[in-house]
Structures are given as C-alpha cells and as structure tokens.
Length: 131
Image 1: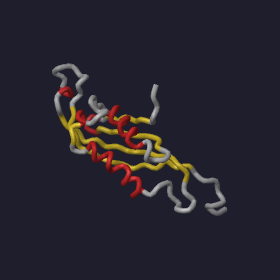
Image 2: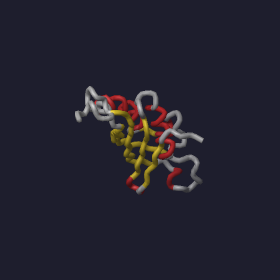
Image 3: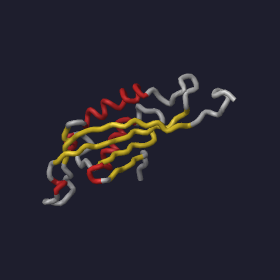
Image 4: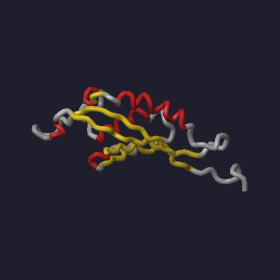
C-alpha cells in the first residue's frame, strides 16, 4: 500500500527555543530571593498536532515554524519580563500562557507550550485550557 493510499497519520511536531531574561516575582513575600530581580535561562518547546501533508510529506516546514516563533521569543529574550504587558507577574506558568496567546492565531494545530527551568529541575506545560 502506497503512502497516499494509507490513512493520513496525525503527528505531533515540536520546535525548541531558548531565551535569557530578567524578572522578579512581585507576589512573593518581602525578603524572598525571587522577589528581587534576577535572571534565568528558559528552555521552551512549542508543539503542534496535525496531519501529514500528502504533498510535502511534512506536518509543517520547520523554517516556517521558526519564522512564526521568532518574534515571540524576541519579545522575551534579554528583556525584563515584568515590563511586558501580560507578564507583570512572570511565573513560568504565566510565561507559558503568554506564549500560547501570542502564537494561538498563527500556528494551526497548536497543542502545547512547555517551559523548562533546568537550574531548579522544574517545568510547566500549558494546553490552552482555562477554568
């Protein structure tokens, strides 16, 4: 059976990114180290889920994906996150939501945003759900 005759597979496709930034967490109590301005290296992943395009054989052109992602990452990289509208309390959780909102109209099949902070061994995942 040729590839064209088979059912079209649904594939998760991901692109990784990194950004460096400064922030402080204004909701933490006075004296807490995270209340003071400090910096992090964040590692992220944007995942889309879609059908393989029968013509190209791909879910999405990785160069196009990176082109869509770059302006969002550039807004974060080497910036004070607290100064970015929507990130006044820039926890990893809110960063993931913010990135989702930035990309949701641009990436067909957006499924998940992951944010990792390996220096403390933690990560968050956001899939667009709201209560």
